Image 1: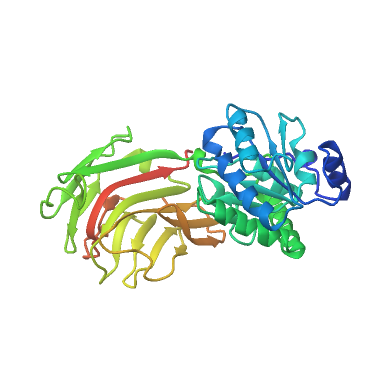
Image 2 (image 1 turned 135 degrees about the vertical axis):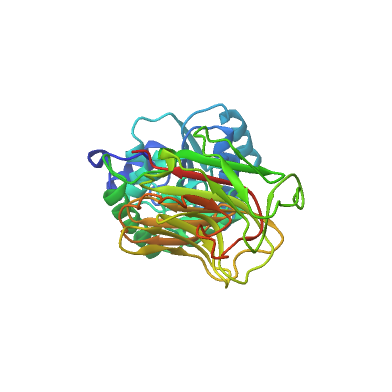
Length: 393
Protein backbone atom coordinates (compact mmCIF):
# COMPACT_ATOMS: atom_id res chain seq x y z
CA UNK A 1 0.00 0.00 0.00
CA UNK A 2 1.16 3.58 -0.53
CA UNK A 3 2.26 5.99 2.14
CA UNK A 4 -0.54 7.58 4.11
CA UNK A 5 -0.86 10.45 6.55
CA UNK A 6 -2.43 10.54 9.99
CA UNK A 7 -4.96 13.34 10.02
CA UNK A 8 -4.24 14.17 13.65
CA UNK A 9 -0.68 15.17 12.61
CA UNK A 10 -1.78 17.46 9.78
CA UNK A 11 -1.31 21.20 10.30
CA UNK A 12 -3.60 23.13 7.92
CA UNK A 13 -1.75 25.93 6.14
CA UNK A 14 -2.47 29.30 7.71
CA UNK A 15 -1.03 32.53 9.01
CA UNK A 16 0.18 31.26 12.43
CA UNK A 17 2.27 28.51 10.83
CA UNK A 18 3.58 30.88 8.15
CA UNK A 19 4.68 33.35 10.81
CA UNK A 20 6.44 30.65 12.87
CA UNK A 21 8.29 29.26 9.87
CA UNK A 22 9.61 32.64 8.76
CA UNK A 23 10.70 33.55 12.28
CA UNK A 24 12.38 30.15 12.70
CA UNK A 25 14.56 30.55 9.60
CA UNK A 26 15.09 34.31 9.66
CA UNK A 27 12.92 35.12 6.64
CA UNK A 28 10.93 38.30 5.97
CA UNK A 29 7.45 38.04 7.44
CA UNK A 30 5.77 38.58 4.07
CA UNK A 31 8.10 36.37 1.98
CA UNK A 32 6.80 33.63 -0.27
CA UNK A 33 8.60 30.38 0.55
CA UNK A 34 9.16 27.51 -1.90
CA UNK A 35 10.40 24.23 -0.39
CA UNK A 36 11.84 20.85 -1.30
CA UNK A 37 11.51 18.14 1.34
CA UNK A 38 13.33 14.81 1.35
CA UNK A 39 16.66 13.05 1.56
CA UNK A 40 19.48 14.94 -0.12
CA UNK A 41 20.39 12.14 -2.51
CA UNK A 42 21.21 12.11 -6.26
CA UNK A 43 17.89 10.61 -7.36
CA UNK A 44 15.99 13.50 -5.74
CA UNK A 45 17.58 15.86 -8.29
CA UNK A 46 17.81 18.82 -5.98
CA UNK A 47 20.21 20.33 -8.50
CA UNK A 48 17.15 20.67 -10.73
CA UNK A 49 15.25 22.22 -7.80
CA UNK A 50 18.02 24.81 -7.35
CA UNK A 51 18.08 25.53 -11.06
CA UNK A 52 14.33 26.17 -10.87
CA UNK A 53 14.91 28.41 -7.81
CA UNK A 54 17.46 30.42 -9.78
CA UNK A 55 14.89 31.01 -12.51
CA UNK A 56 12.17 31.92 -10.00
CA UNK A 57 14.46 34.34 -8.17
CA UNK A 58 15.23 36.23 -11.37
CA UNK A 59 11.57 37.15 -11.76
CA UNK A 60 10.50 37.22 -8.09
CA UNK A 61 13.59 38.28 -6.11
CA UNK A 62 11.65 38.39 -2.84
CA UNK A 63 11.10 34.62 -2.87
CA UNK A 64 12.96 32.39 -0.39
CA UNK A 65 13.70 28.68 -0.62
CA UNK A 66 13.98 25.83 1.89
CA UNK A 67 15.74 22.50 1.39
CA UNK A 68 14.45 20.31 4.19
CA UNK A 69 16.35 17.13 4.95
CA UNK A 70 19.85 15.71 5.14
CA UNK A 71 21.99 13.49 2.96
CA UNK A 72 25.22 12.94 1.04
CA UNK A 73 24.48 15.63 -1.57
CA UNK A 74 24.33 18.51 0.93
CA UNK A 75 27.85 19.87 0.36
CA UNK A 76 27.40 19.82 -3.41
CA UNK A 77 24.01 21.52 -3.20
CA UNK A 78 25.34 24.23 -0.89
CA UNK A 79 28.13 24.89 -3.41
CA UNK A 80 25.60 25.00 -6.23
CA UNK A 81 23.45 27.51 -4.33
CA UNK A 82 26.51 29.73 -3.97
CA UNK A 83 27.33 29.36 -7.65
CA UNK A 84 23.78 30.37 -8.55
CA UNK A 85 24.13 33.37 -6.18
CA UNK A 86 21.24 32.10 -4.10
CA UNK A 87 23.03 31.58 -0.77
CA UNK A 88 21.23 34.48 0.89
CA UNK A 89 17.86 33.15 -0.21
CA UNK A 90 18.24 29.39 0.39
CA UNK A 91 18.03 27.77 3.83
CA UNK A 92 19.29 24.22 4.42
CA UNK A 93 17.34 23.08 7.46
CA UNK A 94 18.92 19.68 8.03
CA UNK A 95 16.77 16.98 9.58
CA UNK A 96 13.52 18.14 11.14
CA UNK A 97 11.01 16.19 13.22
CA UNK A 98 7.96 18.32 12.41
CA UNK A 99 7.51 18.15 8.64
CA UNK A 100 3.73 18.80 8.91
CA UNK A 101 4.52 22.16 10.58
CA UNK A 102 7.00 22.99 7.80
CA UNK A 103 4.37 22.15 5.17
CA UNK A 104 1.78 24.33 6.90
CA UNK A 105 4.09 27.33 6.68
CA UNK A 106 5.35 27.23 3.09
CA UNK A 107 3.77 28.75 0.00
CA UNK A 108 4.56 26.00 -2.48
CA UNK A 109 6.25 22.57 -2.59
CA UNK A 110 8.47 21.66 -5.55
CA UNK A 111 9.34 17.97 -5.94
CA UNK A 112 12.06 17.36 -8.52
CA UNK A 113 12.89 13.65 -8.13
CA UNK A 114 13.82 11.44 -11.07
CA UNK A 115 12.83 8.24 -9.24
CA UNK A 116 10.01 8.07 -6.74
CA UNK A 117 7.41 5.93 -5.04
CA UNK A 118 4.61 7.68 -3.18
CA UNK A 119 6.53 10.37 -1.28
CA UNK A 120 5.21 11.20 2.16
CA UNK A 121 6.37 14.82 1.94
CA UNK A 122 4.10 15.38 -1.06
CA UNK A 123 1.16 13.81 0.77
CA UNK A 124 1.80 15.95 3.86
CA UNK A 125 1.93 19.13 1.78
CA UNK A 126 -1.29 18.16 -0.01
CA UNK A 127 -2.93 17.36 3.33
CA UNK A 128 -1.97 20.83 4.59
CA UNK A 129 -3.59 22.41 1.54
CA UNK A 130 -0.27 23.51 0.03
CA UNK A 131 -0.04 23.34 -3.78
CA UNK A 132 2.51 20.93 -5.27
CA UNK A 133 4.49 21.07 -8.51
CA UNK A 134 6.20 17.71 -9.10
CA UNK A 135 7.83 15.55 -11.72
CA UNK A 136 5.56 12.96 -13.36
CA UNK A 137 7.50 9.91 -12.13
CA UNK A 138 6.79 6.81 -10.07
CA UNK A 139 3.58 7.02 -8.08
CA UNK A 140 3.14 10.78 -8.43
CA UNK A 141 0.72 10.64 -11.38
CA UNK A 142 -1.20 8.12 -9.26
CA UNK A 143 -1.34 10.50 -6.30
CA UNK A 144 -1.99 13.81 -8.07
CA UNK A 145 -4.69 14.41 -10.65
CA UNK A 146 -3.06 16.88 -13.04
CA UNK A 147 -3.86 19.76 -13.24
CA UNK A 148 -6.77 19.94 -10.80
CA UNK A 149 -4.99 18.69 -7.63
CA UNK A 150 -1.42 19.65 -8.45
CA UNK A 151 0.88 20.20 -11.40
CA UNK A 152 3.07 17.53 -13.01
CA UNK A 153 6.04 18.31 -15.26
CA UNK A 154 8.63 16.16 -17.08
CA UNK A 155 11.59 14.89 -15.08
CA UNK A 156 14.75 16.96 -15.25
CA UNK A 157 12.95 20.05 -16.59
CA UNK A 158 13.92 22.96 -14.35
CA UNK A 159 12.36 25.45 -16.75
CA UNK A 160 8.97 23.74 -16.49
CA UNK A 161 9.20 23.56 -12.68
CA UNK A 162 10.01 27.27 -12.54
CA UNK A 163 7.32 28.25 -15.03
CA UNK A 164 4.57 26.46 -13.11
CA UNK A 165 5.86 27.74 -9.77
CA UNK A 166 5.90 31.32 -11.04
CA UNK A 167 2.35 30.96 -12.33
CA UNK A 168 1.13 29.79 -8.94
CA UNK A 169 3.15 32.28 -6.91
CA UNK A 170 1.48 35.08 -8.88
CA UNK A 171 -2.03 33.69 -8.40
CA UNK A 172 -3.25 33.19 -4.82
CA UNK A 173 -6.69 32.07 -6.00
CA UNK A 174 -5.17 29.25 -8.10
CA UNK A 175 -2.98 28.19 -5.16
CA UNK A 176 -5.98 28.08 -2.85
CA UNK A 177 -8.05 26.04 -5.29
CA UNK A 178 -5.27 23.51 -5.89
CA UNK A 179 -4.59 23.21 -2.18
CA UNK A 180 -8.26 22.70 -1.36
CA UNK A 181 -8.71 19.91 -3.91
CA UNK A 182 -5.41 18.27 -2.90
CA UNK A 183 -6.44 18.30 0.77
CA UNK A 184 -9.76 16.64 -0.06
CA UNK A 185 -8.00 13.95 -2.14
CA UNK A 186 -5.63 13.04 0.69
CA UNK A 187 -8.41 13.01 3.27
CA UNK A 188 -10.49 10.68 1.11
CA UNK A 189 -7.83 8.31 -0.18
CA UNK A 190 -4.40 8.65 1.43
CA UNK A 191 -5.03 8.77 5.15
CA UNK A 192 -3.79 5.92 7.33
CA UNK A 193 -6.04 2.97 6.54
CA UNK A 194 -6.87 4.11 3.01
CA UNK A 195 -7.63 1.22 0.69
CA UNK A 196 -6.15 2.67 -2.51
CA UNK A 197 -3.18 0.56 -3.70
CA UNK A 198 -0.03 2.31 -4.87
CA UNK A 199 2.41 1.06 -7.52
CA UNK A 200 4.59 -0.77 -4.98
CA UNK A 201 1.62 -2.91 -3.90
CA UNK A 202 1.40 -4.66 -7.26
CA UNK A 203 2.98 -8.07 -7.89
CA UNK A 204 4.55 -8.92 -11.27
CA UNK A 205 2.92 -12.12 -12.54
CA UNK A 206 3.72 -12.07 -16.26
CA UNK A 207 6.87 -10.86 -18.00
CA UNK A 208 7.37 -12.07 -21.54
CA UNK A 209 10.38 -10.93 -23.53
CA UNK A 210 10.38 -11.92 -27.17
CA UNK A 211 13.48 -12.88 -29.13
CA UNK A 212 13.24 -14.72 -32.46
CA UNK A 213 9.57 -15.42 -31.87
CA UNK A 214 9.93 -17.24 -28.57
CA UNK A 215 8.00 -16.37 -25.40
CA UNK A 216 10.53 -16.32 -22.58
CA UNK A 217 8.76 -15.80 -19.25
CA UNK A 218 10.77 -13.96 -16.60
CA UNK A 219 8.09 -13.53 -13.93
CA UNK A 220 8.83 -16.71 -12.00
CA UNK A 221 5.20 -17.85 -12.15
CA UNK A 222 5.66 -20.19 -15.10
CA UNK A 223 3.26 -18.30 -17.39
CA UNK A 224 4.93 -19.62 -20.52
CA UNK A 225 3.33 -18.72 -23.83
CA UNK A 226 3.29 -20.26 -27.26
CA UNK A 227 3.35 -18.37 -30.55
CA UNK A 228 0.42 -19.14 -32.85
CA UNK A 229 0.36 -18.17 -36.51
CA UNK A 230 3.22 -17.65 -38.96
CA UNK A 231 6.72 -17.79 -37.51
CA UNK A 232 7.67 -14.15 -37.03
CA UNK A 233 10.76 -12.73 -38.64
CA UNK A 234 13.65 -12.36 -36.18
CA UNK A 235 15.06 -9.02 -35.18
CA UNK A 236 13.51 -5.65 -34.69
CA UNK A 237 14.13 -2.20 -36.11
CA UNK A 238 16.36 -1.10 -34.53
CA UNK A 239 17.92 -3.39 -31.93
CA UNK A 240 17.45 -6.95 -30.79
CA UNK A 241 14.68 -9.49 -31.21
CA UNK A 242 10.96 -8.79 -31.04
CA UNK A 243 7.73 -10.55 -31.93
CA UNK A 244 6.30 -9.47 -35.30
CA UNK A 245 2.53 -9.56 -35.92
CA UNK A 246 1.24 -9.52 -39.48
CA UNK A 247 -2.30 -8.27 -38.87
CA UNK A 248 -3.89 -11.63 -39.70
CA UNK A 249 -3.81 -14.24 -36.96
CA UNK A 250 -0.54 -14.11 -35.05
CA UNK A 251 -0.75 -14.18 -31.26
CA UNK A 252 0.91 -15.50 -28.11
CA UNK A 253 -1.31 -17.67 -25.94
CA UNK A 254 -0.39 -17.75 -22.25
CA UNK A 255 -1.06 -21.08 -20.63
CA UNK A 256 -3.52 -21.13 -17.70
CA UNK A 257 -1.99 -20.08 -14.41
CA UNK A 258 -3.54 -19.47 -11.01
CA UNK A 259 -1.59 -16.21 -10.78
CA UNK A 260 -3.69 -14.75 -13.61
CA UNK A 261 -7.15 -15.71 -12.42
CA UNK A 262 -7.84 -13.26 -9.59
CA UNK A 263 -6.32 -9.90 -10.56
CA UNK A 264 -8.34 -7.55 -8.27
CA UNK A 265 -6.42 -4.60 -9.72
CA UNK A 266 -3.98 -4.63 -12.60
CA UNK A 267 -1.16 -2.88 -14.36
CA UNK A 268 -0.09 -3.73 -17.92
CA UNK A 269 2.86 -2.40 -19.88
CA UNK A 270 4.30 -3.19 -23.31
CA UNK A 271 6.96 -1.97 -25.72
CA UNK A 272 5.33 -1.69 -29.14
CA UNK A 273 6.32 -0.78 -32.72
CA UNK A 274 3.17 0.21 -34.59
CA UNK A 275 3.17 -0.34 -38.35
CA UNK A 276 -0.41 0.73 -39.06
CA UNK A 277 -3.98 0.98 -37.78
CA UNK A 278 -6.98 -0.26 -39.73
CA UNK A 279 -9.04 -2.46 -37.41
CA UNK A 280 -8.81 -2.68 -33.65
CA UNK A 281 -5.32 -3.70 -32.48
CA UNK A 282 -5.21 -5.73 -29.26
CA UNK A 283 -1.98 -5.54 -27.24
CA UNK A 284 -3.09 -7.82 -24.38
CA UNK A 285 -6.44 -9.41 -23.55
CA UNK A 286 -7.52 -11.32 -20.45
CA UNK A 287 -10.62 -13.14 -21.64
CA UNK A 288 -13.69 -11.82 -19.84
CA UNK A 289 -11.54 -9.69 -17.51
CA UNK A 290 -9.64 -6.85 -19.24
CA UNK A 291 -8.35 -5.55 -22.55
CA UNK A 292 -5.50 -3.20 -23.52
CA UNK A 293 -5.87 -2.09 -27.12
CA UNK A 294 -5.58 0.51 -29.88
CA UNK A 295 -8.76 1.56 -31.67
CA UNK A 296 -8.90 2.14 -35.48
CA UNK A 297 -8.58 5.91 -34.99
CA UNK A 298 -5.41 5.55 -32.90
CA UNK A 299 -7.04 5.86 -29.47
CA UNK A 300 -5.19 3.91 -26.77
CA UNK A 301 -7.72 2.23 -24.49
CA UNK A 302 -7.73 0.14 -21.32
CA UNK A 303 -10.90 -1.57 -20.11
CA UNK A 304 -11.98 -3.99 -17.39
CA UNK A 305 -15.11 -6.13 -17.09
CA UNK A 306 -16.80 -5.94 -13.69
CA UNK A 307 -19.43 -8.62 -14.23
CA UNK A 308 -22.06 -6.40 -15.81
CA UNK A 309 -20.29 -4.04 -18.23
CA UNK A 310 -16.96 -3.00 -19.71
CA UNK A 311 -15.53 0.23 -18.31
CA UNK A 312 -12.26 1.99 -18.89
CA UNK A 313 -10.13 4.93 -19.98
CA UNK A 314 -9.21 6.30 -23.42
CA UNK A 315 -6.56 8.63 -24.81
CA UNK A 316 -7.06 11.22 -27.53
CA UNK A 317 -6.96 9.97 -31.15
CA UNK A 318 -3.79 9.65 -33.22
CA UNK A 319 -1.58 9.71 -30.14
CA UNK A 320 0.77 6.85 -30.99
CA UNK A 321 3.58 7.28 -33.50
CA UNK A 322 4.24 4.86 -36.35
CA UNK A 323 7.54 3.01 -36.75
CA UNK A 324 8.92 4.10 -33.41
CA UNK A 325 9.33 2.12 -30.21
CA UNK A 326 7.13 3.41 -27.37
CA UNK A 327 6.23 2.10 -23.94
CA UNK A 328 2.49 1.99 -23.20
CA UNK A 329 0.98 1.35 -19.76
CA UNK A 330 -2.54 0.82 -18.42
CA UNK A 331 -3.47 0.75 -14.71
CA UNK A 332 -6.76 0.06 -12.94
CA UNK A 333 -6.43 0.39 -9.16
CA UNK A 334 -9.41 -1.81 -8.27
CA UNK A 335 -11.24 1.13 -6.68
CA UNK A 336 -12.04 4.04 -8.95
CA UNK A 337 -9.03 5.11 -11.00
CA UNK A 338 -8.01 4.06 -14.52
CA UNK A 339 -5.01 5.66 -16.20
CA UNK A 340 -2.90 5.39 -19.36
CA UNK A 341 0.72 6.36 -20.02
CA UNK A 342 2.83 6.62 -23.17
CA UNK A 343 6.57 6.75 -22.52
CA UNK A 344 5.71 7.46 -18.85
CA UNK A 345 3.63 10.53 -19.61
CA UNK A 346 0.00 10.30 -18.54
CA UNK A 347 -2.34 10.46 -21.55
CA UNK A 348 -5.63 9.35 -20.03
CA UNK A 349 -7.35 9.36 -16.64
CA UNK A 350 -10.81 8.29 -15.54
CA UNK A 351 -12.01 8.57 -11.93
CA UNK A 352 -15.06 6.40 -11.56
CA UNK A 353 -15.84 3.41 -9.31
CA UNK A 354 -16.03 0.27 -11.46
CA UNK A 355 -15.80 -2.48 -8.87
CA UNK A 356 -13.88 -5.71 -8.93
CA UNK A 357 -12.37 -7.18 -12.10
CA UNK A 358 -13.84 -10.51 -13.19
CA UNK A 359 -11.38 -13.44 -13.22
CA UNK A 360 -9.57 -14.21 -16.46
CA UNK A 361 -11.70 -16.82 -18.23
CA UNK A 362 -10.69 -20.07 -19.86
CA UNK A 363 -10.29 -21.78 -22.33
CA UNK A 364 -8.98 -18.64 -24.04
CA UNK A 365 -7.17 -17.25 -21.00
CA UNK A 366 -4.72 -14.49 -21.74
CA UNK A 367 -3.36 -13.55 -25.16
CA UNK A 368 -0.76 -11.07 -26.39
CA UNK A 369 -1.17 -9.41 -29.78
CA UNK A 370 -4.62 -10.77 -30.66
CA UNK A 371 -8.21 -11.05 -29.50
CA UNK A 372 -8.45 -14.47 -27.81
CA UNK A 373 -11.24 -15.92 -29.99
CA UNK A 374 -9.26 -15.23 -33.18
CA UNK A 375 -11.64 -12.79 -34.83
CA UNK A 376 -8.67 -11.16 -36.60
CA UNK A 377 -8.25 -8.16 -34.28
CA UNK A 378 -4.50 -8.56 -34.35
CA UNK A 379 -1.79 -6.10 -33.49
CA UNK A 380 -0.05 -4.89 -36.66
CA UNK A 381 3.61 -4.32 -35.91
CA UNK A 382 6.00 -5.64 -33.27
CA UNK A 383 5.94 -6.21 -29.53
CA UNK A 384 9.25 -6.41 -27.68
CA UNK A 385 7.98 -7.35 -24.23
CA UNK A 386 4.87 -7.29 -22.09
CA UNK A 387 4.40 -7.21 -18.33
CA UNK A 388 1.32 -7.77 -16.21
CA UNK A 389 1.01 -6.98 -12.49
CA UNK A 390 -1.88 -7.83 -10.17
CA UNK A 391 -2.89 -6.82 -6.66
CA UNK A 392 -2.29 -9.90 -4.48
CA UNK A 393 -5.23 -11.37 -2.63
